[in-house]
Amino acid sequence: TKEPTWSQRFESALHPAIARLNASISFDIELIEYDITGSQAHAKMLAHTGIISPEEGSLLVSGLEQIRQEYLSGKFHPGIDAEDVHFAVEKRLTEIVGDVGKKLHTARSRNDQVGTDTRLYLRDQIQHIRSCLREFQTVLLDIADNHIETLIPGYTHLQRAQPLSLAHHLLAYFQMAQRDWERLGDVYRRVNISPLGCGALAGTTFPIDRHYTAELLQFDEVYANSLDGVSDRDFAIEFLCAASLIMVHLSRLSEEVILWSSEEFRFVTLKDSCATGSSIMPQKKNPDVPELVRGKTGRVFGHLQAMLVIMKGLPLAYNKDLQEDKEGLFDSVKTVKACLEAMTILLHEGLEFRTQRLGEAVAEDFSNATDVADYLAARGVPFREAYNLVGKVVKTSIAAGKLLKDLSLSEWQQLHPAFEADIYEAIAPRQVVAARNSYGGTGFEQVSKALQAARTQITVK
Ligand code: ARG
Image 1 (cartoon, rainbow, N blue to C red):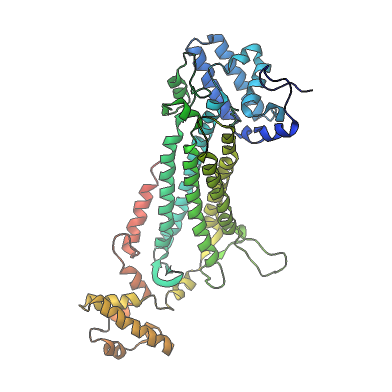
Image 2: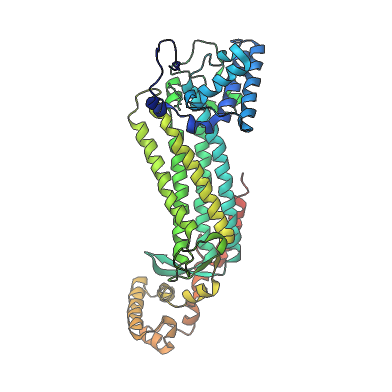
């Protein structure tokens, strides 16, 4: 029979099926380096405050360092009997340094310990994701630079609306990524608060120094309330919200790339390095990258939802339900990083805009109709009246199989005497785009300025 894991209060070991349900080692091993770093800070604090001797403190710190090396060199594989990463490390420490290892858990609980580990982990991951966002933004800007004067149909309701500068379209995604970057910075502030020293729930009888460990671990603050400290997962939910929004943005871009690469749009060609084929249809080239990104968005939303539901009925303070915070968090981190990386590569080298086709696309529709109305309105005709007149021309032109540029000057003048020969220039796609020079608009001048401003924005680290 197996030894019980816990105190002498227990007489027998867990039922194997229950042990499997209970154990988190298969996934929380991901936290091991943070667990070691957190424990080293705790050991230093115990020595610093005289709770253990300086010699004991350094033994603990170096023993923990040895476990890190063993783990990194692939020599440490704790099994399910360790239950979780915290027990695994403590057990190995005692094997390495002997009985003094049993002092590590003085004035600490796994509850403040796991909260510390998770925050240290998330802190690193947030910085990593922020730098992935910067790379994504940089690629967007590089492409936008080359396409200020490339026109692309602009849509509302997925119906042709008004033509755009392609750079302007790409800069919209730059702005979303910018908000994502800022949002993660804001989340970081609430991730970077130390729960270490909150104990199981109520604090500790030992004269610990929470600010000391916080400083060693570079936390900005410490939790003010021990119950809140061990049971708060707002920071994880906030992160999952921010991660979900990143996925929303990537998924919207994915959807556009998928549409653009279809035979119906033909706005982009996919390069072989980022596309796949079909096992039966030899002609196929499929946009799997954006499809997977769009698809993986679902799991990140799911993890956010799961975390909200996990939290909603929890009485204070720690409950084992909280162990369920990790897999969704880890998977979201992994997914967001992989998707950002893949979309960055796709943009950088996986697709090419078909500029000739785009130029033709913006010339073959009625997306210059607003400009005819604006032309009249600028010459004193009330806008609504101009709008109605143009609606009529659109109707008759469609019936006649013509575009607005095909109308003769006399046809225009019959419609309204304010029309002059310069109407043709005013409705040419390039001019239609150039003319939208209001702040934040698609006019080339605005877009050049926006690009410059964006370049400055991403220099902020
Ligand atoms: N593996 C646990 C978790 O991830 C560690 C904390 C366990 N605490 C306890 N009181 N059982 O949440």
